[in-house]
Image (cartoon, rainbow, N blue to C red; front, side):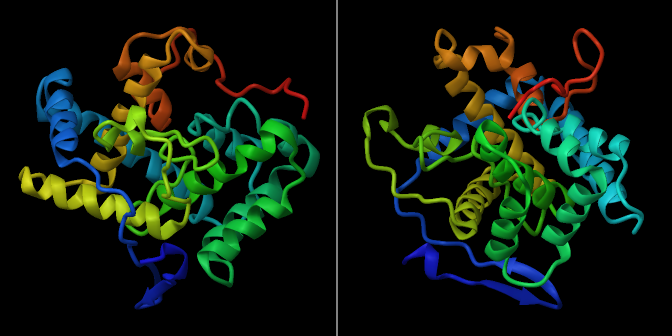
Length: 275
């Protein structure tokens, strides 16, 4: 089945993404191992519950800023949002300075509530912002963060670290047995593919008896898998993005934008980047 031909559907006024049939078989054994590794690393369900709570708090923050009021967003509002977007916060601030926080905030709200299909809204969001270079490439991640963390049950997490077809890299690859040796990854980047991935993970977790907080648990497992990829690449270019960290739990929190405190204090946003 071609995921590009599957439309987003609406039920009771809420957008629903029809999951695509994945074009490559993923290994549930690797999913199971990831879950058990996480339980051990976080010393049981209580430790995972704390991380789930951090992600739920992130959702509440996003909703309060983007849905809780019709007032234009301020620079402080955008700073609060962007602080929690790991792949965005080092690159996007020049766009904020160029168009102003109110315009960017309006673009985010239109992404969430505007007319047209999900793909149309995502495309319009990226096309409406005057970003170039690295800032332009992170717009997909910004739209993915806004959609997912405002409506975590409705939209899967579609960031590049989950899957980037251009570089054939991301957490998805870590669920493929022998993935290090494969060269053809026909996943694409459609919302239906990401929802298909999420359905596959949801079904696998149900077999393990995991039914609560599935939207966030799936995010956590994806972040764990990506952290393993980062660790494997630790001597390469990815190391600089994580400041030379080796603690994969800290890496996971950073990827998810769920850090409770920054190690050295201060803002995580890089404001001196020129695009």
